[in-house]
Image 1 (tube, one colour):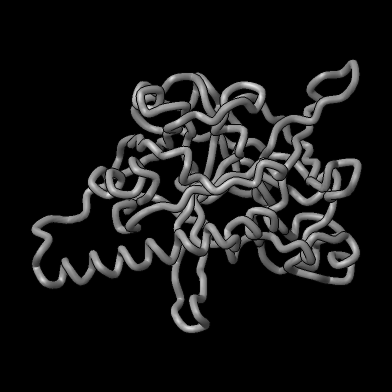
Image 2: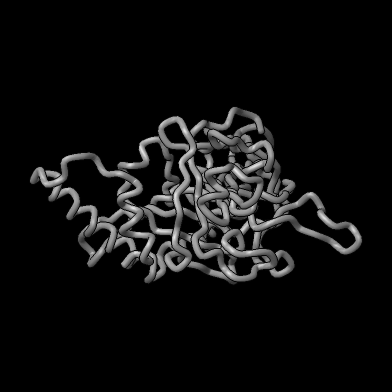
Length: 297
């Protein structure tokens, strides 16, 4: 990479554990995920924000994509320390084929230190094209563009706080039949990095991109795992599920329904707060008891 990666990209990452106890201990197991904010239009009128945790579907399952963990946990940095929260497996919205899972979150003000990636900063399917880049497209991305991945280096990922690490590389292949319709990235993935966000950077560092007048960072997708080859094993390359498949899941009926439900709850909370019925600020554990322990019902 030719420049320093902004701190906010480290703050939008969380760690995934099989259960809350593992997260509290900072056990050397699990994967990575990241926080996303997506905006909906309900009934063509109300603009509703949806707040989600995003990771791989396989990160929530036992080995070899077995049964789901009943209460997988996510751990993130909040107010200067690592905080672990338990989720309910039934509330994760999944696309098993694409290996993506998203989890609807709760009242956003309890996450003062968390960065949420706006879905507007996803790379679009029509922005990935060498031809478009060569025609002068500032916002397009092509083979050889630099990428960085933010995730967990197990045993070096932090105990009292999360300390994500960075891996860098380049786009090697576009989604096509031989890559299972995924990106192939020249960037090594190992255990712990599953579910990590992968960002593409357009810079004016070298031809044929020297006409780009500023640096642009977009989410190109989510790390699924290393690419393996016969008699070679880990090739040092990584499969990345394109960002537009994450967007498809965010726009699914289940995700829209969850966001509408959370919008109503947040509005009711605000009414209660203004009437003085709530004597204290929202507590993350109180909210979780209502929304996760019983599958959000």
